[in-house]
Image (cartoon, rainbow, N blue to C red; front, top):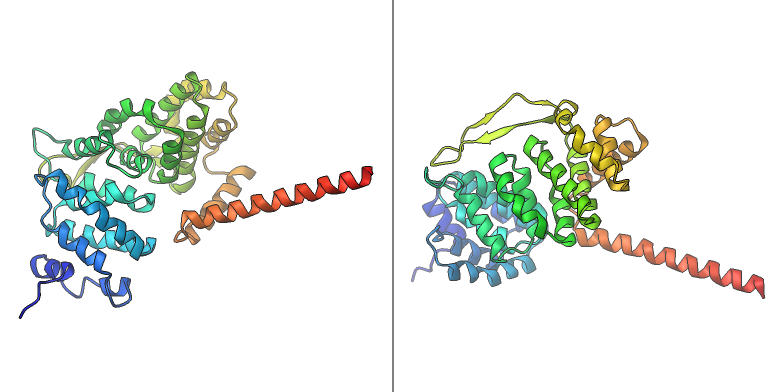
Length: 340
């Protein structure tokens, strides 16, 4: 009696990738977890016309995938799914479960941008992928709102950024922190404009907890881009139209910021340390100050240990905080003893 094909076997049978190109067993060291195979099996029939219940049911399967895999393995699983989408053996909608149920921004962010690149659109609705993501955000169906919004902002298309403006007023400090963590990409003119005008609005409304995170996001973009050149993109959305994008001549960051000097002057008057550090980066983006040298050293360290989970870093920070508290208590005890 022939057994049903596994999710991976079905991909190899119906898809255009070969065994040589697919090495999923190496990712999981031989045996692929049952939850992963079940996820792959259920991604195959998904289309834009699939009922919402069909997507909702994958929530529990993906939760088991998270429990059975490491972050690094899920990152490679995302690349495996993306290869099938690019080979047209799987629809881009297969990325929706990752966008909805994944909490790690290192997967959510590239999944969103891959969806924007690969989702087929019509001439009447060229921004169909953007509309899909808006629907998910409005319905509260996304686990990491900040990362999804950050991916759309950093995508680099002015029309997408313009459509996102109404969402800025509803972003919480926690979502803004997730936005800052996920904001690492090449510099785009519309992304810088989006963040700077957002900062002005936040300062006026005295939402400083959110403003600090957005300023940190902009600083991270500058620190992480070694070219310090700003692009101005205009993607050709539509049926099979994404393969090319109109791109104006790139300019240096300093040249691009000349148009935003009034905004930068307004922000400098707020006297907020995080904004001051961002403005310092703008004035000397190549980085000769001690602050920038230290930040670039930290970025290099993060790249070296990029596979460490965020929870591990939180434990380290918490441990140092506990140690400081112990020392402070000892010093108080010594002062009390000396007084006696």
